[in-house]
Length: 132
Image 1 (tube, one colour):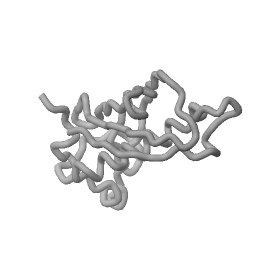
Image 2 (cartoon, one colour):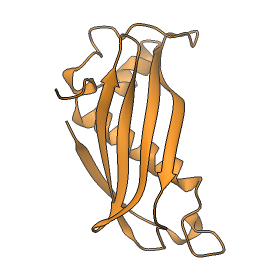
Image 3 (tube, one colour):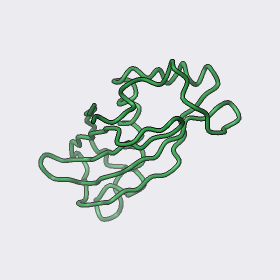
Image 4 (tube, one colour):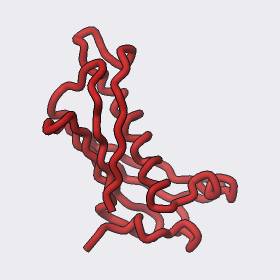
């Protein structure tokens, strides 16, 4: 399952060089992961209401080219690993044919005390697992 979404770079997200500041890529990736969860049928608000959460445990980003103000970016998200309580989502940010950044985001499902918990059946949707 690959989820695609787009966004437009806003001027205030750019640094003095005119490039998107590296920290803003975290926001872009977060936006895309939430869209991914909605697309695969993972009811994030219901999980929160039930006392669970999905925490980011690790983010690896390789920056390839700068994104600039007013660029339209395409972000692709897909699962590449799934365990009982955690997984990894691969993401890429593109501008047209240019690869802007690649990321691997490790997530952990947690209970109300913030401790890792096995993903309950209600939220263990097939789209969290990578395609074989």
